Length: 212
Image (cartoon, one colour):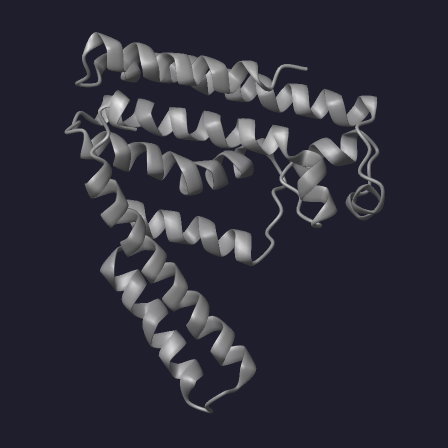
C-alpha cells in the first residue's frame, strides 16, 4: 500500500472505524432477534434512524447499505442492479481511497469508483462456484433465467457448465469496461511514476488472473 502512495495509518483508522460501526449494527440486529431484552429492538430502530439522518446518502452510508444487502441475502434481477451493489460495496471504497490521496475532482472520483466496481465484478466472477456453495448468488437473475438455470438447482450442483462460463465471461467483459473507464482517473492520481506503474500493474494483474 505504501508503494502506491496510500496513507496506511489513515486507512487503518477508517477501517477500524467502519468495522466498529458494522459490528455495532450487527450486534444490535442479532440481539434484537435473540430477544435478550424486550427493549433492545428499540435501540436498533434508533440506530438505524441515526444512520439515515447522519448520512446514508454519504459514502460510508452507501457502503453500510451494501453490507446490509449482503446480510439480507439480496439477489439482483438485472446487471444494473448488480452495478448498484458493486458501487456500494466497492465503488465507495475506491472513491474514499482517492479522497485520502487528496483527489477532489468529481470526474476523477467517478473513475476511482469505476475501478472499485471493476474489481468487485471481477471478484464475483472469480467466486461464482464458492458463493453458490454458500447459497449466495450475484449473477443477474435474468441471465440465469435466459440460460435455463434454476438458482436452487445450481446451489445443489454448482458445476462450471458452458452456460455458467458464458455468464462469467459476460461479467468479466463488464468488469473490463469499468477497468478501461478507470484508466483516466488512475493517470490523474497524485502519484509519482513508480507508484502509478505499481497501481497499473496491480490492475492488470487483477484482470489477467481471471481470464477464462
